[in-house]
Length: 233
Ligand code: APR
Image (cartoon, rainbow, N blue to C red; front, side, top):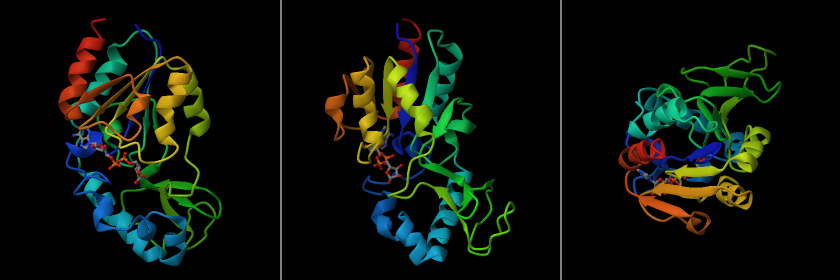
């Protein structure tokens, strides 16, 4: 039986909820260049376009519903008695929350938040944010940016996440390509500290050598079955 568990989720866990991933054939990055909407330079160069991109994405994500993979995490958190189960997500959607998951760390930010670049105040809203949005804390105008971690920015909650990675005894990656640093180093870090590692994906990923086990298939089918068996141990 394991001790603490860390689950790292990527866009693939939300695919069966109808949310496009980033790098699959119909992925978000196929229709937009990362350098146009997901870098701090893009934001400084054209804040209106970046706000429009995330305001549109926000509308799509707001109505999405969690799928059996998200719900299986809730079951695991409720029934697993040998340690904590933490969710470190690269996703900016709120499907982990909607499914009732706890201990969630959005290391790439979340779509329903914006942060003031003057005073770091964070607002939570499903409404549009743009260059006219005034910071309710300091009154700055045109300083609110989507609370999405752009390429080149520091990840959020990493102090806490590092502690979780060093302590966990089971690391589970669900629906991530392993294409982005530093999330793609998490499996190796946990392995170094003695954890078993397992990935759930449609196929083997770029850092698949860091995983002891690979479960191929749709996470909405494979992960609930895995949780069922894990809870029997
Ligand atoms: N079940 C399991 N895995 C799936 C499913 C599914 N139903 N559908 C897709 N996948 C897998 C794909 O095979 C792919 O490996 O999910 C992964 C999605 O990979 P990406 O699109 O690269 O998404 P992600 O890994 O989350 O990207 C990481 O990159 O663009 C940045 O900040 C963005 O958080 C994102 C980060």
